[in-house]
Length: 330
Image 1: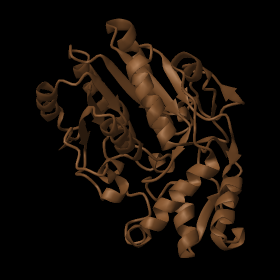
Image 2: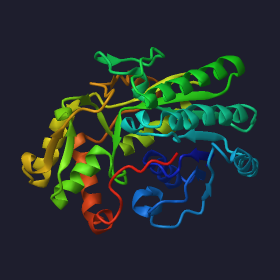
Image 3: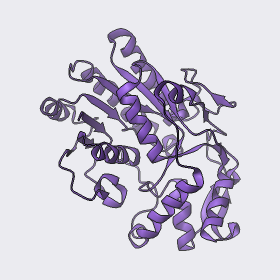
Image 4: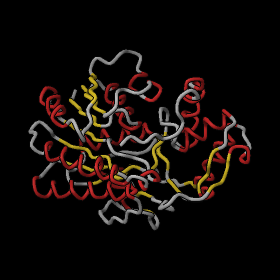
């Protein structure tokens, strides 16, 4: 049993990773800037028994670093996994200073503190393929960044800052960049749960740019498995891509959902203009993770969407009563 600090515990990926940890009997402290959200979005709340090895604290790394230090001193984590970031691409154009504050300035302050903590064996920084910009085919792990939005620029800047800490201080950082993650418990402003819910409710789904951009989608269970392997066995200073080897256009993805829910494409979709700075594709080659850490994805896109649809159907009355759009918090 190991002690994990999970930063961004209210996020889809963070809460799913906590569930994975608790099922393997690890001790976990989760922190998030907001109080725990509705349990339909917190997979660790779905466990059969109330987890005894989990503690949650509401901490904003932008403003409450001293409070975090207190909790850290008490908990003495061996592993820190950081999912926290100001997300959303399109919205980052509106108030870019919020993205730079949280994803760069706040993170630099956090890391400057973490590098002084002796108990930390590994710090896993969950980054994003958006840092690469639109890729020309499949790409290997690198720092050849070409970000095209304030969100992506802020994430790339933080990665480079952490790389300098590794080189200067041997800070035990390891980076992950995952393809488009989806699954049960994901917030409704993301394409897969949104399309599934709107198909059930008879609502129109906006398809930006006609949905011709290409992505690789990976189920959250495969991502959490990979993240734990990287935490335990990843080489410090290295980056690992977490991705399937399959691609699909957003349009074909929505068509698959229409077929699965027996809803005509024209009834579900409303085509709109593309978003500013949207990348045509980012495709991550994951051979390094597969070869070095003996990982492979196990859940096909069709099977993963069916699992997500079951979650939507089981929680339909609840989900349709909750906000469906992203709400920005500075």
